[in-house]
Amino acid sequence: MQALFTDETNAIQERLAQDIGAQQYQIWFKNAARLTLREETLEIAAANAFITQWIRGHFEKPIQKAMEAVLDRQLPIAYSTDPSLSPAAAAKTGPSVPAQTRLFGQAAPLRKKSAAPLKMNLHTFVVGVKNELAYNAAKTVISQETSPFNPLFYHGGYGVGKTHLLQGICNEIAASRPHNRWLYVSAEDFANQYVLALKTRKLDAFRRRFRSLDVLAIDDIHFLANKNAMQEEFLHTFNSIDLAGKQIVLASDAHPKEIGALCEKLVNRFVSGMVVRIDPPDFDTRCRILTQRVEALGRDIRRDVVEYIAGAVSTSVRELEGALLKLIAFSSLTGGKITLAAARQVLSEHIARTDPVVHNSDITSAVADYFEVRPGDIYSAKKERTISLARSMAMYLTRRFTKMSFPEIGRAMGNKNHATVILACRKIERAIADNAELRWRCPAGFRVVSAKEACDRLIEKIS
Image 1 (cartoon, one colour):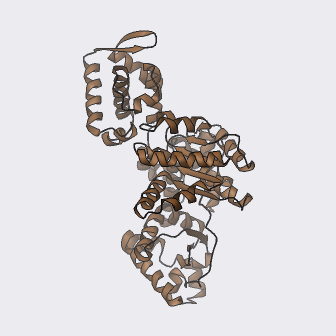
Image 2 (cartoon, one colour):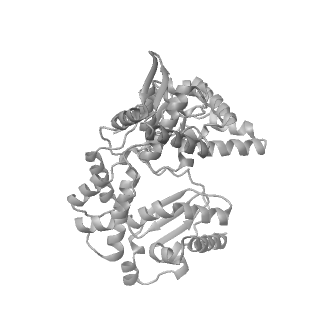
Image 3 (tube, one colour):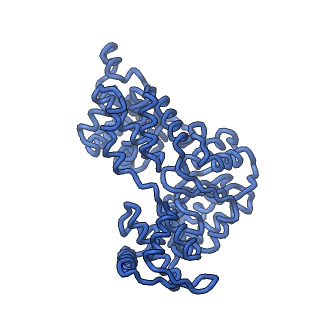
């Protein structure tokens, strides 16, 4: 059995090297990491905290892909650091095991293990003015067996901490209430499991698994838009958990009423709980996030460099951490010092490519308010004149102020065809060029405003 695991380990190693390339493999894995395959876990030890974080952030998907190719399944990955794996330590001590084993470690004997914890926890969540309410709501869910609000629904742009909070809640509940049954999944995973249950005629087992939980956390719930059968299944799952007095925590990139093609029953369920918006962190919070990450990686970076990164990257924690990791990688691989001048040079391209401050949800909210319609109407398939005009203006402004492509805008606007987005943008462009009048109905009667004036007011509102 031991040899079997060693063979599988070697096969995963070979597949990983093939997928990521010899150069990347040489830099990040060769004699600096050890992989140990157990029955239910793949354990990866690296020479230091920086290499551990880099492998987790950049190679976790290729590792999972290599595992699936070799084992026909994916296992949880547990990370750790082992200073003896560093080249300096290896040079001092010399090889104590065969080279092949030193790279990835000997296979461990088979043994049962509890499920590995999720990657993120609340201890590492940096609280600021933009996410304090979201954090306090999470602590309430953790501290009380019966939450005062159900569901807890987080929404906001990408990289603001929604997934961090969902995983943190699950990890805290696992630690404080070990008797509770909890599950964290993405909405896509929920949908895939549902389809598999239908195909294999195991729908009863699927329902028992999800509906008997004490805490169900689902990320990216907007994925269920336009999937009527899955929405119906999730509605019954939601009702079962809610009636049992258990907790549901959800996350989405938009407010429930702004998720297009979501059935009214689900929207009503979602808004009946606590809906919390999470905005991008302010400058002070971004500095504290970077400082925490620097300390976790065991590095020492000057305050002016931290403030430069925090000032230049303002929309997403992921982009913030990505900029920091790129800078540390440059220093580690070249031996250069991390100075302010070096930071400006190394991060110039990264900062130029970061997303703009304006997000699709901000634009839609501003347009809905101006035309006096609901944001959900813009995402819907309704074709009334006022709603259609508001939707066209939202598409035009999204194209103008973000880097989203026509297909991406279509998906964000309730899974519209990209051709619809192109036509809407051309329609508003012509109206502005001709300074045509826009006419729509609002609760107070008809309004008539020139296209240029309407666009200027919306731009001012968005800014």
